[in-house]
Image 1 (spheres, helix red, strand yellow):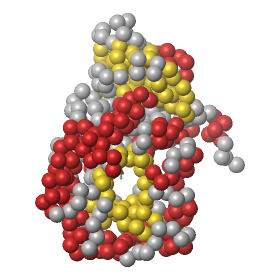
Image 2 (tube, helix red, strand yellow; image 1 turned 120 degrees about the vertical axis):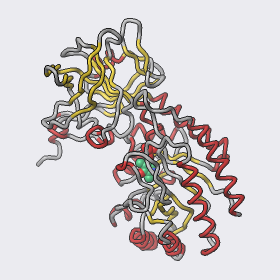
Image 3 (cartoon, protein in one colour; image 1 turned 180 degrees about the vertical axis):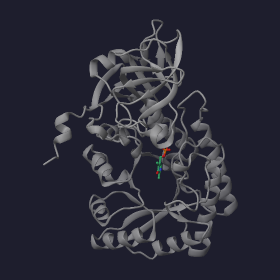
Image 4 (cartoon, helix red, strand yellow; image 1 turned 90 degrees about the vertical axis):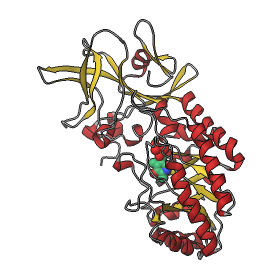
Amino acid sequence: MICSNITRDADGTLRFAGQSVPALAEQYGTPLYLMDEDRIRFNCRMYRQALRDSFGDAALPLYASKACAFKQMYRIMAEEGMGVDTVSCGEIHTALAAGFPAERIWFHGDGKTDADIRWAVEKRVGRFIVDNETELLALAAEAKRQGVKQKILLRVTPGIDPHTFEAVNTGTVDVKFGVAIQTGQALDFARLALEQDALELEGIHCHVGSMVFDESVFEDSAEIMLGFIAEMKEKLGFEAKVLNLGGGYGVRYTEKDKHVDIPARIAALADFIKGRCAALGIAVPMLLLEPGRSIVADAGMTVYTVSTVKHIPNCKNYVIIDGGMPDNPRWCLYRAAYTVLHAERGGGETELFTLAGRCCESGDILQPNVPLPADVRRGDIVCVCTTGAYNYSMASNYNRLGRPPVVLLRSGDSYIAVRRETAEDLCARDL
Ligand SMILES: *Cc1c(COP(=O)(O)O)cnc(C)c1O
């Protein structure tokens, strides 16, 4: 199976986190997001332990909460001792409403508004990750007005191509995020930050992309970032305390994807960083990483009921389900690959089917050409694996469909973390 938390009984029943998927579909209805809480916690502990082993207690993983955010998720992150990354006041509000400590929140984003900045400073959000000079000056003015010394990191771009899909590549000079090191603009950005009395510059941040499988990507960006830290030390007399290398480790969506041994990668990265710091004559900075996908992706599975099966002779077969692009837009957006499984029957004769959603949109496809039992029919339960990241958080109400509930699975038990969106919910804000 694609992940160790998915198994199949001898009679064909699929299990996720040890629990029967058809039974969960029966209990909670479909479409349904399942999340394996034990796996989320396991992944958090894996990051914390790996960083602790290499850097001691100073290093911290920040969960990139845009991957999947709801109150219970922030409670889990608080309990696991994680920091969190946020990109909007909505995410920050959700975190605070769940009791997540404000000082462990990092606030990202290239388009923060004046209202965002004012509110987040009022809420005493721990750090702003400042994207550009305009934001820097707006934040400095607001912090001064509120009499706060706001801690910040600067987002810079190291000019690295992580060799992933273009839409998730964020490290090259021409992207919309951050300020480029190569052009010399990042040095001016740091100088301007140091001139602001209301701001305390702690260090620098970069995030070069997502679904990174290449061995050297983090080392390559660390090389450039540490070089920039040395340059700031020499030219500005400022020694950065914090180096945040962003998120991006890849996960397995299909059998074709490699498994990334994250603790081994972090250990190798740590050796590299320590060696470069010694060579450059700078202190080893506190390392932050921002994993999103690799914390929650393999903890998720989406469960659907088949509505229709269509055979178009000599052409194509469709399995149409009771969800679609509103609950998982990733194939539409990125041609993202997924593994699709029948929840009641494995083995036997299979055929290729295109798994399509129920929206009035021919592009509403979840995955083309997946093998499913040849006798798949209305009422069967099918599921899409590895949907924990960027599914619920990207869900929409297109075609006025309510979003599925999120059910968490914990040590053999299950509970609702986000209830199903009802027709009344959909009209609740309509006047
Ligand atoms: C999206 C994002 C992340 C998380 O990336 P993953 O691929 O989900 O690990 C981390 N940091 C920043 C700045 C991001 O934009």
